[in-house]
Image (cartoon, rainbow, N blue to C red; front, top):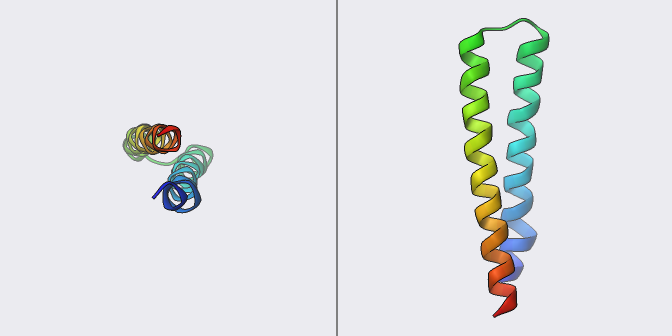
Length: 64
């Protein structure tokens, strides 16, 4: 279980955070909609929370 979490889910979570961050940066550089930037910011914060929870669960399971 910890192998799956550490080798699959954590990289997916980090990559999704990076992708949303880059989408937000591109939107801002192009002068896109402020509403879209706000939605991307909220999505990034949520994905960061999920990534931290997955990481903490993995660390906790490795300590068991």
